[in-house]
Amino acid sequence: MSTSAKVQVMLEIESGSSWGDKCQLDQVYKQGREGAIGFLLKLITEHGDGRIRVIGEAKVIAVTTSEDKP
Image: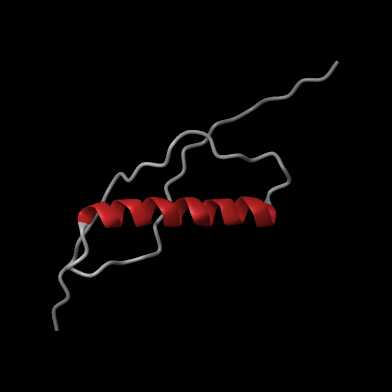
C-alpha cells in the first residue's frame, strides 16, 4: 500500500520591476504578471524535480506608487 498527498499553496511574488510615472496601468499589470510568472517558472525549472507545476491564473493584487522626493 502507498499513500501520497498533493498540496496547493498560494504564493505572493514581488514583480521585481518598477515603472515610470508615464507608464500605463494596464502595462504595469501585464508586465507585473509576466515577470512574476517568469520568475516562478525559472525557480521551478532550476530547482524543481517535476513535483511542482503552476495551476490557475496569476492575478495582480496590489499596485503601489511612491513619489521620489529629494
